[in-house]
Picture 1 (cartoon, rainbow, N blue to C red):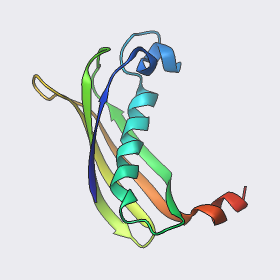
Picture 2 (picture 1 turned 30 degrees about the horizontal axis):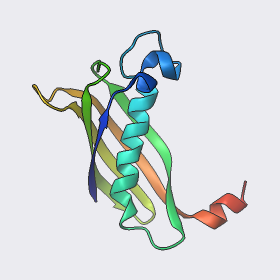
Picture 3 (picture 1 turned 180 degrees about the vertical axis):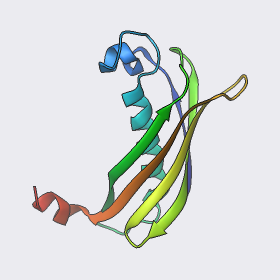
Picture 4 (picture 1 turned 45 degrees about the vertical axis):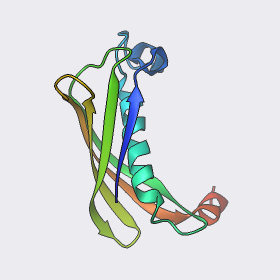
Length: 121
């Protein structure tokens, strides 16, 4: 289970816009959302009808700044599966130029029945 997604940093993705700082660079909350999106894409093909996955654990390092307009590639690779539990290794890097790694993460997702999960709220 692997996935690769590409995003372009916009004004709406900046630290200033998402409330995580005052600079016009990619905000950490947006980077995290992109990393989670990649894990969702990676696990999607293995889900049966009515199932979804929920994030249960995240460890993220935001290693470098990304300017508005920069393209960022996020890859998620399955590193561990135990029944419903799936762990992914994620890397985000700049496209073009030197391909600098700007973030790494380990994200754990658990497969659940969507209707049953929502009925517990």
